[in-house]
Image (cartoon, rainbow over all chains, first blue to last red; front, side, top):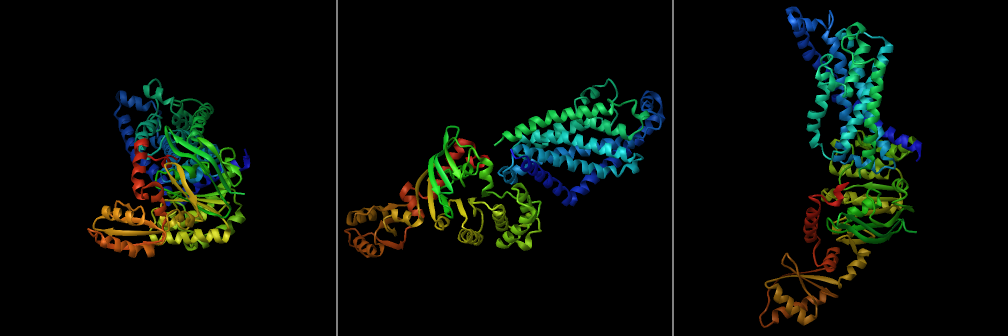
Length: 272
Length: 333
């Protein structure tokens, strides 16, 4: 196998993904608008509800206070929104290969003198890059929700988003390899992507011992969001509900990546 | 040395044999046509030659490389234009070409020269920076032809290159193809189910039920039909057929559209005699119209199969549907 040629092939597929993102202004706009909408509507609504509950006292108020004094829900939600954006973008990017198949473009790629493995890797790399770029754009909103971090933390955040994106792109490709038409997409959205988002702790703290927390441990997004959160929020706030130390979470994500990547590439290479 | 050599090539889909022990060779610089009804196995054959489909048995070499064992070498030396468009509609024409150049390892400098030249040839220079989504069907096809030639292929494969295009655009596309063969000495291999288009080819292989039933130049194929073709419309085709068969020893065919087709060596001399015979018969047969034609490829197909291509299309399509739940082998990719 000619490695230089294979690398060029993967690079070409990656290049197309990135080119398509940066030349599509509506996509860039949507990438920013959706998280802003979530922050304003969900964040604004729940913030005021939490304040109300805290003020009312009683068992609920006490539970809310358990989150720590001066709990800022917007700051808590922000890493969750980042995770959501990365999840949607990377999984959609990979699934777009089904579109390419339906509209014929995939043929152009599959008849080229480049191996399927390189095509699959290029696709995953492209989806991950786009998802990370989108996350970087959202990261610029951090000052608005009162989150502060230095350059080093900024780099760490980007790397974790990239890793989470790679995990989800691989999962997306794994799903897409088995799918011949876009018709099944709604089902995947309803039964795979949305539950993953809601159970991951992106929108609410995972409290120890609840069934949600138990399920959350099997969802890659949980570790991504938790790691982002630990880097952004003060350790004192995180002490109550973090899942594991960041280093462990990075390892778990890397594990998920391998577990999804290997069968995804194998299945993609095998189809005719 | 032939640029395409195919020997005993077969492909099965389950218990259905789509291509059945086909052998042929195509010379360098030839414009070679594969003609046959839908479902005859044309697309399946082309898919195997382009390394998109595994062979069930037999062998094929394209540009000196074995299609089963030297896949990448074959891919590098061919250009491909599929039945359905394979462009990225969200990118511009030039970006689509760039993507292809990168996949095939065309250098940046070469791409600059080559893409300008090819866009000029297909008259898309002005549109190159527009999104492909805004292109018409004919423009997309032209862009695909330019793209297929970008990496200097030795053979250009075209699967139904003019399907779904209006007659004017069809003629336009054909001008390019003929020009390509003339000026660049490129080998063109195309499939079609259009008789008129097949006439443009240097040689035609007629395919039916997965087999090649005839292979020759259009002129030689037409010689298989006995000289001229006389078409009659009469008040009673059956009786006219009997009368003419008795008098001249010809074997008239009655078509489904209600005409009588007679093959004869010298049509112009045959017609007056035929008219006299029909009107002087004890019970004369009235003749409404007479036409005299040089034989067409369609006549050859009828002669070989006893059906017109259109009649075969319906049975071919039904056969496919019955076997594949609505999908022919060509759609399986």
